Image (tube, rainbow, N blue to C red; front, side, top):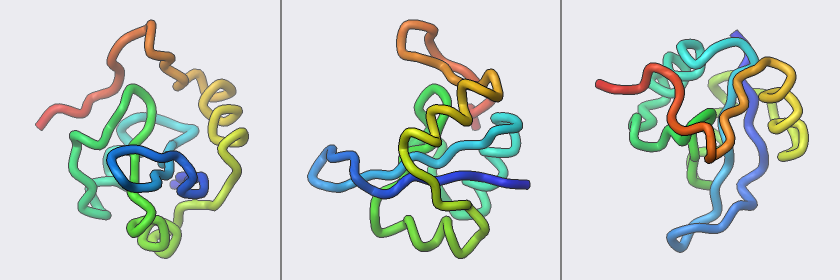
Length: 94
């Protein structure tokens, strides 16, 4: 299982955020996020948003640090990229 995370550089709601992604499946991504205790409401179409204070937790758990550009490339290459106009994706309901 390999997950990827970009640096926490995305501002929102008074915090900086990272994107946690899988290049294999949404199930793999969900299992990893569940293991970290990330709430499912943090899932957004094709990634989880993680606040900066959780970045090190994800890396310690095995997420590979990559650039934001690489996150997008990995999602496109895997076929998991879900732009806003394509709507929700992945099995994330409780």
